[in-house]
Each structure stands twice: as C-alpha cells, then as structure tokens.
Image (cartoon, rainbow, N blue to C red; front, side):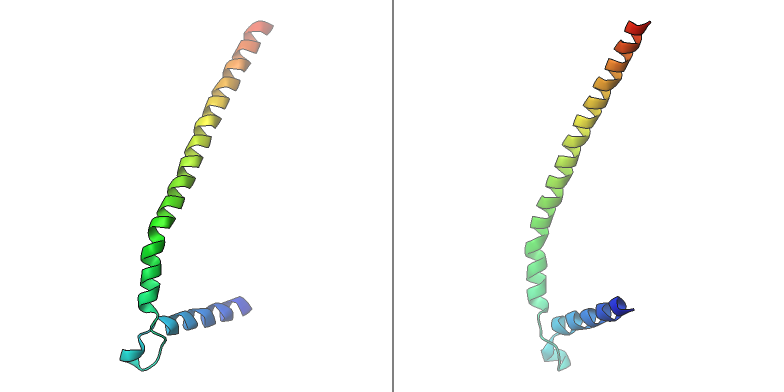
Length: 82
C-alpha cells in the first residue's frame, strides 16, 4: 500500500513538473527539457541495446559450437566403447 501511494505521489510530481505554467497557471514547464533529454537519450539507448544484442548473439554462437563439439565427442566415445 505504501508503494502505491508513493508511486502516485511521484507520478503527480512528474506531471506537475512537465505541465506548461503559461497555459494552465501552474506547473514547472519542464516539458521541453524532458523532450530534449528523451531525444538525446534515445540514440544512446539504441547503441546500448545493440551492443547487448551483439554480445548475446556471440555467446549463443559459442554455446552452439560447444554443444556441437560435445555431441561429436560423445558419439566418438560411444563408437570406441563398442
């Protein structure tokens, strides 16, 4: 219950900060600053997501190669035992 109330308070504070004071008579008019932040942060976020996807892809390729190597080793061991 506390987290719900705190979340609502934070949401209200963020909304108050973004509202244009000139039109509504209240608010902090941070809307333009928020948009600038989002525009500047989007490319950085895209690069980070791309790097993470690249690392996951490389790890997946390594895991598949390792699994294939283990399968071929098991097959060779089975042939030798027979």
